[in-house]
Image 1 (cartoon, rainbow, N blue to C red):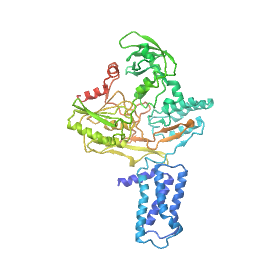
Image 2: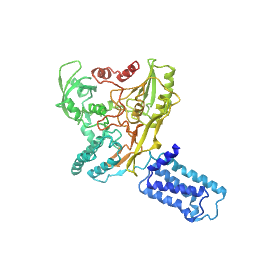
Image 3: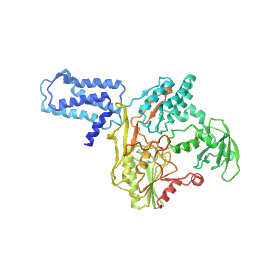
Length: 562
């Protein structure tokens, strides 16, 4: 019964053309499969009408997988019945021929049935081509569409009129000055104001972009971290860099930057590779971009090294470091990295690193790899298991639910999925896409510690969100996860002037109360929050940065004795 209900519910995601095609194809099936209708010459032309409607739908721009499946059903039926247009069958079909037609008609409906099964995920979501408009016209059209279709407008309390009033003059200014860099920076600032990690310029080659390169393409050889008490310490020092030669040491406290209090300097940073959805991510990126500047920029820095209480001043000149400080402070996965691998630590604790929730080049089934590790841990009678999700960018929610099945002994809801319905103009739940976690064959009931950070994003946030609150589970980290848990099935896309293609998530993940889960709100709060919040203070900084200890791992191990 649930399957039938899901099929009926999926009708809401069809376009009008697709609904008509489905009805015509069903009629043709009944016409040839069941001897209920008398022969009528008009019936022979119905498959041809379906072809015409398919062409009209195609010309309207619907080339979604969903539409292509309906087109294929229509084409099969047309090819199987086209002979009757030129040579009408006046006598009843023989039993053998009717059997053949029944089989053909049933097979031809399979693409349509499959389409209904995935209708919500692959529904038609047209690309808005605004590329021929002026900067300001394209912005207004984009803002208008998003005000209706962006999944988190209400959740983030976005004031669309205020956004229009803020950015329209900037786009007009770029338009009047014919300044592509100002246009790009304004577009990027607008997109990043949503604080959503799934929003991006999909064809952006950031490190080669002229505006990015001009403003932050060079560095001074350091990166910084802000402690919980507001102090800013040097967390990365490149050997031979201007900062290194000036006497600045790893762990030095920065007191002022280019004549400004360091706190003010941090707030003036405006660049990052991706939108910062949460406060933890924003603060992290401010420290990374504080010491980025145009090449040749000369600044004065006041600092105090850890082993010296004297306040010193250094004059630094920015040089082209090929973005080394940015690259060294952002994890980049390699193709050869296994999605899942693990070991037993000290013969007492299980440890599993899940880098991403997708099959890898040399590991086709990460869920099976995890199951094998859990078996190994159980046989070794470990005292607890650590699941390391730090820097996990996400992947496939269905894989997450498979993995989560090892940690429950009864069926449990993972998420409802909600999309904007183009017919009703509202967000509707796609019940055919509801994800439920079912208990796996191997059940792990032991103590679990999950390691997270601000780069645990998208589907990577699913496991900690799902397991949070269970009595045997503790989430450990300096910050919450990324706060970007939206759905990207048939993303909102717009072609903008300058050749940029912008992309937005198209769906919401809802919890059992059908409330948005995971995504950050207007205050930058969201994601899975730690049960054990690791402090970022002088002691943990020294352990992590100076001594190279895995501080979060140490806290996780300590949690097993609590």
